[in-house]
Amino acid sequence: MMDAQDVSSFQQVERLENGRGKCPFEPAQRSAAVMAGGVLYAATVKNYLGTEPIISRAVGRTEDWIRTETLPSWLNAPAFAAAMALSPAEWGDEDGDDEIYFFFTETSRAFDSYERIKVPRVARVCAGDLGGRKTLQHRWTTFLKADLLCPGPEHGRASSILQDVAILRPEHRSETPIFYGIFSSQWEGAAISAVCAFRPQDIRTVLNGPFRELKHDCNRGLPVMDNDVPQPRPGECITNNMKLQQFGSSLSLPDRVLTFIRDHPLMDRPVFPTDDHPLLVTTDTAYLRVVAHRVTSLSGKEYDVLYLGTEDGHLHRAVRIGAQLSVLEDLALFPEPQPVESMKLYQNWLLVGSRTEVTQVNTTNCGRLQSCSECILAQDPVCAWSFQLDACVAHAGEHGRLVQDIESADVSSLCPREPGEHPVVFEVPVATAAHVVLPCSPSSAWASCVWHQPGGVTALTPRRDGLEVVVTPGAMGAYACECQEGGAARVVAAYSLVWGSRRSPASQAHTVGAGLAGFVLGVLAASLTLLLIGRRQQRRRQRELLARDKVGLDLGAPPSGTTSYSQDPPSPSPEDERLPLALAKRGSGFGGFPPPFLLDPCPSPAHIRLTGAPLATCDETSI
Image 1 (cartoon, rainbow, N blue to C red):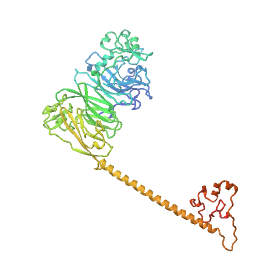
Image 2 (cartoon, rainbow, N blue to C red):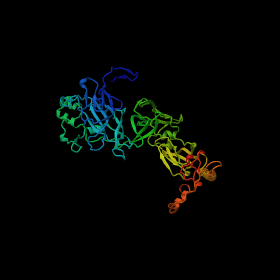
Image 3 (tube, rainbow, N blue to C red):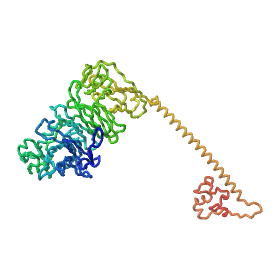
Image 4 (tube, helix red, strand yellow):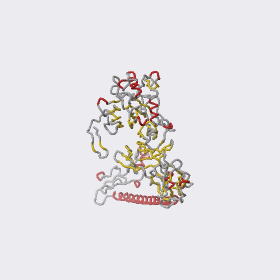
């Protein structure tokens, strides 16, 4: 379901109506919509599974609803990014119709590959399209689409995912609107974002060019010959000139024209960006959203300022100077990193939303620039240096004692010589082999910074936010970050690396070595002590065993008054005489060793060991 609300009071002003074909079934499904002449033009999915994409004119009388044909050649798994409406007045063409542009990324059908190739495209329909009488009933007869090309200078056609598009409408009728698009790469591991600008005139030129026909035998698109294109030209909006030819509306178009446009919605040539290259290419930032507006500088010249929302919740403010887009400011929007999902300009404020938060940013924040050189070097068309207030202010068009230079940033001629400012040197306690990042933040994106470091340092890694140092003895000392811009150079950050324990690694190593040596000596002393104790216990045990053997011999003599039985030692047998080892064992312990080297098998006092007894056991009953 969907409804209409008053944005000033957030009160419902219209009744609820069915939202099928007008908005997606869930937020994860990409969609786009625009109002033109009180009519809603929407690009979304029609079924719950999201498998039926549709671009439709979905508000108005039911008989006026027009939509795309359900064919892969029209829409093939698209991800919609934006929708824009242009009136004939913006073209300077009185004999025209309102045109609706849809920007999206879809799967190409013209490549034979193991992976699906994504292609950014723009489609156009005419507001006065009524569909065909027999062919393409309640379907667009003006639906045409073309590829959008945003190549990087080194990456070729890598930026194939269209994330968002913003339109910048000029205030003067003599100028035409311009589209700014954000592109990214579809391949994993290639974190590339590019910003390209497109002129509507270039899109119109491509849509008036040759058509493309897909050859199924080779999965390649080939241009259609001009002789094979019927007349009137398929896909054109109904103009006054066509009405003079008895084509008052799309309902009067012949079937051959409608059949051709049904089978050939794609143009053969792509739309190239202005100057044939991107305005900005980054390899470490993923842009998701963009809005644009035009700002008048102090000299009266206009500049395009873009606000770029990133995947990690940052906002980049950039200005277009010629064919280059330069980032002026990088601002963290949320406490926790999260993607920017929506942005809206309202007066001097930018409203930014994520899935969980909404925040606002002042678009005229010039107070962050603290000196005349910083204000001029920032090259921000909104800001100018006021000698009267001794501050960087939003100029608002007045010229009283204000200076600004967007093109060349000539600090030496505009700003008085400032006394050298030396930043505070921060001591950074470190430990051996630690990784330390020394921050350095230049005043603007135009500055180029270099580091001055000790001569013995070898492991350095320059970063966007500073310098990463691997701590070694040669890395100790002073570090300075010097930034140069517009011919002026100054040190913006200074550090001194010191040992965290106030001792060098040599002294620490000496202490550790001494401790280790003491530990080893202690272990050796303990080992010798245990060895001596073990030998002493062994000797005592031997003496106890000898004494016990002696006691056993004394017990062998029977006391007086009792009857005793004696047994002579067995005489050696002939077998013993032949085997002297067996004879030796007869009077010895286990394995031929003498009894003193054996442990007593009968520690209990209830058992008596009789030396020389022929019995193997020592139970009392065997005596």
